[in-house]
Length: 164
Image 1 (cartoon, rainbow, N blue to C red):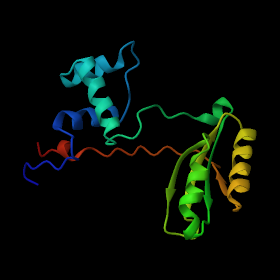
Image 2: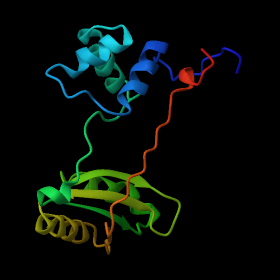
Image 3: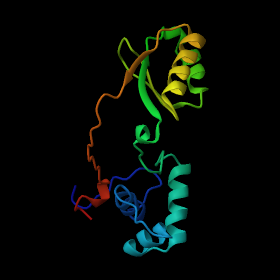
């Protein structure tokens, strides 16, 4: 690429460095964004403003910790529906209306709508899946987690691949 930087619209090299830095551990400190900022030559206010802008622009969709919800008594379930094409938008609206639905996405497959249900208890999860089945009139295929895996996937920004 010889020096060219292919960054998403509205993302500069400082944003890219910040994204890469926050893709891992956040310092355990009273002001973690001040610590991160100091590492990157920014102050805490600049770090926070950049994060707000990246989230509002949709460059980042989420900023937060990952939890082992089952250790706290909760439950996550990946689920799927076989939605007739002519009902897809209607069913998506019904599914997305539930606060227990963490996210929902379309796939080119017989099971064409996949979503994650996240609740504080196994009973609440079962209830949410039952509500979806009743509201849509469709069979919900639930795929609860059987085993925990850690995949340390890190995708550095293009600007930080050694070509800068």
